[in-house]
Length: 264
Image (cartoon, one colour):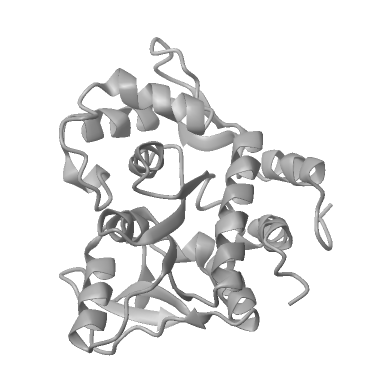
């Protein structure tokens, strides 16, 4: 049954497993390992806007971090089949993100929201932006007319997204975030104090020295490596596109409650 109201930690863990946001997730092991290998081999598509140098050139080092921070199987000999996200690690990361959101609210900071996964996470970001605005934060409005080679950088419901062919676009690219930050600078406007995002949107902001927190799937290791190095403040492990975006609602409610934002 759907969870109404704000779940307890135990209820949220059960919900994450039942909806496959965590636990036995849809992403297969072979896909995870392929992405870890591509990152280690220097394929920048998998770096998500980060500069990893040669620090993660060993695929096994990447796997070790993903086992620690995400809960994937730590056996390098396990090559095929189901992989996992530890729901307790998901909730731990949500609580770390909540602390950073609370800091933003207390300081009435400028916050920018963005997603490369609008089909799954757009409403998570929208609800978080709404709560922070109610707490006194400035939600950054992006400049008009921004675009990249993939499409136009737009903003819907306070969340920056990529539009292509009149459709909101799934993208891992850091270029939309780079376009926003350059656009703000060009207009003489201050950069955000905090970016709440995912994929290359989060990685790009963190690499440029902006406080950044984000969501990432178990086949997107770059943000977890960045968190381990301190470039990204928080990376929340989850399946970032489950069958219904409503499945994320209890997670969002828990996040905002932990940040003290549900009663604002």
